[in-house]
Image 1 (cartoon, rainbow, N blue to C red):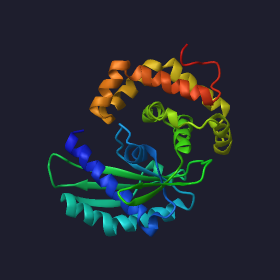
Image 2: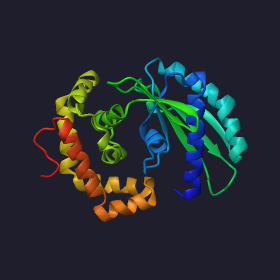
Image 3: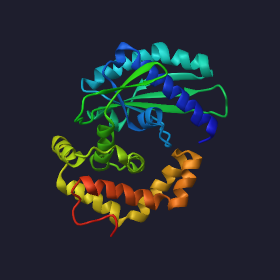
Length: 265
């Protein structure tokens, strides 16, 4: 992805986040995920979507946001970037999911170097041990979850997703210092709420160990495409994706019982 396109995506993401944070439709929507890390925590990893935690009826919230985006976001993007756009409720196999509700935002036209831009806005629910927190940026108040709940949600995602997303492992590596001193106990309670079985945890962890070459290669793809260039060079100098995988697994192993497999074996 070229730098102009990445920059345009990030500018539009910031418009979206600011609009949601300052509109009644965004009340109690808590910014989470990779873009939260990028925007509020200055992560070196870019994100192509925006995630929110929401404790209410996600379908109703999806409709509220669709109206907001159609009324305000699309005209704003057209004005600032000369890009046409559309906002639609996600269709396909995931559309009936009760775990994640998605709004698909798409933009096109304008500068040919940008091409088509797609920014999914995902509404989900994570298990939180702490109260919501407020962060500010350029005079806007952004409701979000605590740093500890964020990193714990990334660890849980490794075991709770049907299909592993290797960006979660990279985020665990980048933000491991956000763990709570009592994260082991907190995670045990969250695992119980989510009903993630010990067997499923051990199977996923065993796969990460037994097929470490594959997982390292996939993490390397994330580094190559989603990490700022200087940071990616630092990672390569230190050992690259293999180091990210090993250290993220060590973090997981320290707070979740993973069975007989160990990252340093």
